[in-house]
Amino acid sequence: MKNIYLLGFMGSGKSFYGKYLSKKFNLKFLDLDEFIETTLNLSIPQIFNSIGEKGFRENEANLLRKTIDFNQNIISCGGGTPCFHDNMKWIKDHGISIYLKTSEELLFKRLNYQKEGRPLISSMSDDELKQFISIKITEREKFYEQADYTYLQWQDENSPVELEKYIEDKLQRSRS
Image (cartoon, rainbow, N blue to C red; front, side, top):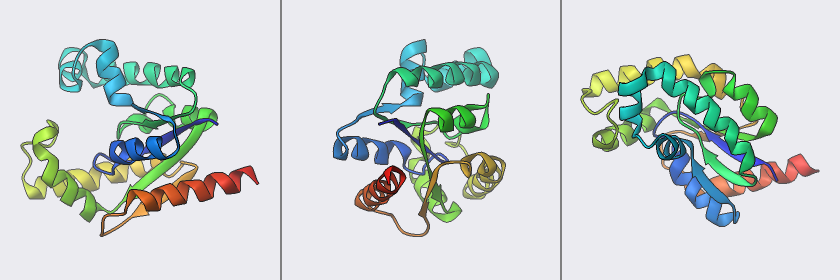
């Protein structure tokens, strides 16, 4: 079985669902941002401060490609991962991609609650956060929508069991 790459905007649940799914499917879990931090021995904010977004994105692309060595993993990609260095094409060529498409309202609810743990948005007002989400989703949607499968999350929280059933169904159909 190929790696399963979870894609979507920050707050879409990639890490949360990825950890759950890895246990259910008896696969390993890899958070790409954590892999980058461990490899470079720096936090994401430190990486951005020392080498900028361009340097971060180059490292991200290189380390994404190393995930080919980790067969049968659930991999949570950073929100911007599919948007740079032909990463989306690479993901599609080397794994199964699932876009966790989340409404702007639900993203706002989740991110507003998680602001303190996310330096990029920690100082934003509610209006700034809503505008940030809207702009970034518009920019990134064309990449996210190239995923093999799209799992919709709108107003309410979806249970991990629903995503598990969705993925099982899609994988079973792809084998038929």
